Image (cartoon, rainbow, N blue to C red; front, top):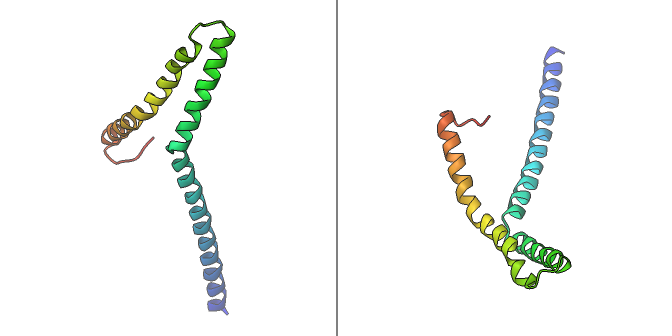
Length: 106
């Protein structure tokens, strides 16, 4: 009887662990998809286009003569930041990990 109880507890525990692993795997798929979206060329291009359209509209409404040319400034600024930030991010992570020595983030 005692062994039957232990077997039942072990089976329940294994099922619980398997369920937790499946939940973690599903979360990892979502996180990887979010990460892929964040760095996708499509996302960057879409934001560049939206930025240009909105900046153009605002500059037109306030009466700027060369509003299309002027709208390139914030658009180019966003685009350049997306191109330089991966390097800054890599540098920051390396600096942070070397400071913590154990590789654990705060």
